[in-house]
Structures are given as C-alpha cells and as structure tokens.
Length: 254
Image 1: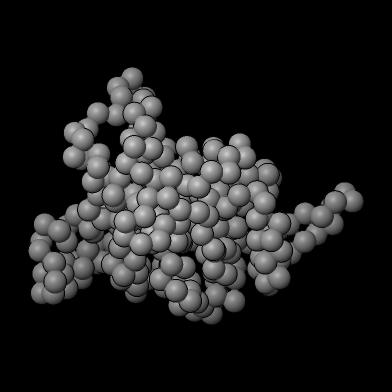
Image 2 (image 1 turned 135 degrees about the horizontal axis):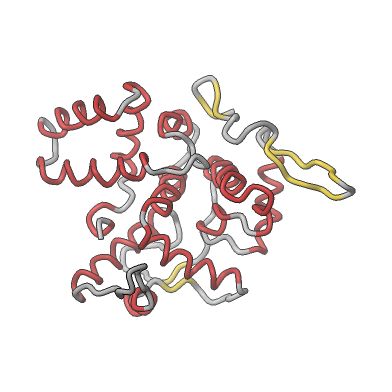
C-alpha cells in the first residue's frame, strides 16, 4: 500500500534518475541521497520510504521501458510536469501489482467500448479491489481507512497524469498525451508485445487512450523521426525507425 504515501513524486523521481545517470550504480546513489536528504527537508524515515519505493520502480522496470540512466535526457525534452508524470506512471504500473490490477480493470472497460466517464470514486475503486484474489487464494482485506487512503493515493496519480482535474474530482477522462510520453508509450507498447502491439498498444491503454484516438496518435508518432509507416505485404505497418529509444541520443531526445 505504498502508493498512499508516495504517488509519483515527480521531482524526487527525477532527482534519483539524475543521480543514477551520474553515478551509474545504486549504492552510490543511496549514499548521496541520504546525505542530501538528512541535511535538507526529509526525516530519515520518510527518506528511506521514498527511496525504497522509487528505486523499486526503476530497478524492476522491464527492458521495454527506458533505462533510468536515460530519463534525464528524456525529461529535458518534456514540456510539462504532466509529461514527466505520464512517463513515470508506466514505471509505477509495471512495478506495483495492485495498481496494475486496478488499471487493467479500467483498460478492460475501455477495450470493451464502455464510453462512461472514468470513475475513480472510493465506491468504484473499492468494488474493484474487493474482486481481487491473490495467488494463494486470499482476498484483498485492509481496514476501510487504509483502503480510503489508497484510493486517494490512486486519485493523486490520476491527477498528475491529467485524468482528473482538481483536488476533489473523482470522475475524469482520457488525458492528452504529450509528444515525449507518446514516444515512450509507443516504444513501450512495441517492446512488451512486439508483433501484437498495434492491436492493443499497452502504453496507450495504460494512459486510458480509447481506440478511437489510436490512429491520430500513431500518425503523430510517424510524423517524428522515431517512427515510420512501412508497406509490408500490401499493408501499412507502423514500426520504430531504428531500435526503441534510439531517438534518445546526444544527451537528449531527437
């Protein structure tokens, strides 16, 4: 239930990525992080928790996501904090099985053509969590207060990626996707599903993009140097121009 205290923490995550890009190993990053935290604005307890949660997302990231050492260059090209949040959100979903379970429930509704607004109220989230069954047969069983804090943490993430507006809102809609998170989402989709990616682009689905938007997003990606349409067997196919994330070069995104 770490989400209740951490969310995406864009600035802290960006800080860690810069440290990792500079030092190249997590031991040195940890040493520098705690030296700075203890002399700055965090208690040791909160600093340890934040470090543990954020580094878990980076360390456990699939190879289909950018190596954390590449994130500073990618973030340099982001226009807004929401752009960065949408990228960091993919690391959260990949690392946190509970978040992933809930996101998959909403993605399933989108994939089935459900057109109702995205409802992230406590009631709806609790209903989804109540359906969860762990591999050992046990069910989701937390105190109501803990579940409510988790729901608020989940909504905070939805606000950061642009799904919800305002602190009190619980109903949202698919967010706009910036150019840089679009390329990351596309490369991620291609990397995790390869040949089948175009029928269910996971990165776009995780960002709640309905199928009606895919063609526009595909065209936007193809208008960059990173992706292109190719004619294969008489049909157009959309592929990375080179290897995924090869557009991150010379210290920045191309």
